[in-house]
Image (cartoon, rainbow, N blue to C red; front, side, top):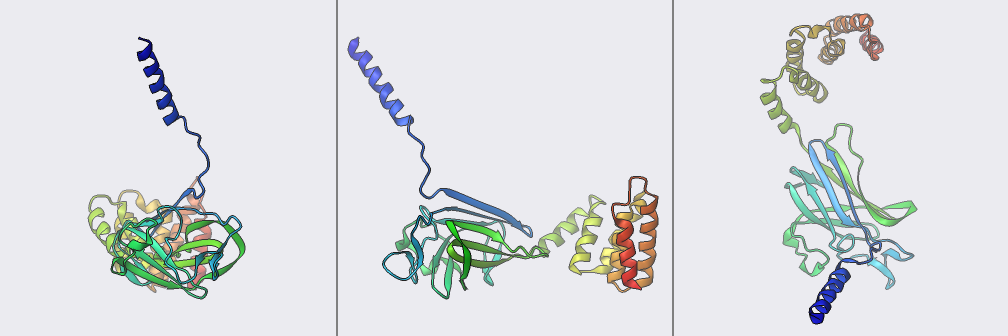
Length: 287
């Protein structure tokens, strides 16, 4: 019986020893960043090594990441980027999916590659035939030191068609350009969803207005929406109609629509939401 009791106690100690481990900060903690560019979800998962008083990039035996050598671009298992749709990276077609970011730093030029195989930290498994795209970019010198290697999704354009994947560490920043195309997807969405929800006519008209795709169609859709029920009283949408007409070069009709929108905004008891001035500015720009 005593032997069984000792055996049980030993098992408890082994189990406790296996689970009661001390948690300490990792030398290169995990990091992640994500953003939507257009209709494309872009996410980056990586490990963040620290500078820790070392020289990171450059020449010499004391440099952590020497120029001209293939680098896993991070620590541990490297850096994985995922695109939810097809994109272009540095002008090259890249299919939706996951890629490992591998790079070759240089004083005046970096090469950043998207590797289709997840090779972790083993650069011996890097193969040129598995490179989906290579971006050749110039590094930028930073005035402030970045202690931990950092990825960001920056410089998203006003029209949501492009962004940069930015790597910064020590005093170096590298930006890899990414462009997306959501126009075809929006067109399919418009074709399908305007048939089932009249409110989608507004979204479709706004998209056509902003993209300049087909202003005649945008006006048709907006008129269809405004003709339903009491929608014509929605002065904010009447203002959009005025914008469409203005972009079509129909100044007289645009001014009339803007005046209609402004009158309805002034009469709205809950406030004009800034549309009186918007209409005034639009009218002034057309005279």
